[in-house]
Length: 253
Image (cartoon, rainbow, N blue to C red; front, top):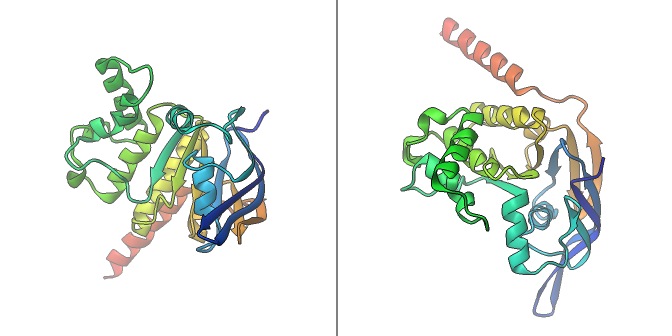
């Protein structure tokens, strides 16, 4: 099996005047289809820069990056935008939904930027299928202000899936959510991963990282740890235990 992501001695240096900031220092990393990887590290460790490189939002200063077998490290801006739209689905901490647009229309947005634009009825059908996957088909006509934080993040996940990408990148996807809703979102990601979707998630939360299958730890722009999760959490079980604990508290109140 070939890796869907392959970084070879990747460096990223930012220059501001005479000052150089080495954000990523010689990262070599492979991610295979069907993996669920959490990238961890303290502020300034380089994890956000690495996510931007993996997501084709930036180019490495040196080194090679292959995405689904394609060397993207030297592509121009237009080619990067095209491969982002076709190969990668993004989920952000802030949801990034258009406030005056329905859930269905928000999910359809990536399809509008495709080179081969689909007919309206096909865009509608694909967006509805994506909402069904995340359990929100019955809220397709709702606007973001009519949805909870967890529901908004589910819409964002559906939007990431609508182009059937090779990989989903999630940048602190539970950062704006309470603990119960965070577990629910991790349950969505685990279900998607069980269906074979490759997921890479940036998080600084140790408990959230335990829902992944593999943890990659960065420090000062370098990979200092890369290991499978041995005590992996199951979101469905965690939610059940949380509900039972809440019920027990109510009975004793």
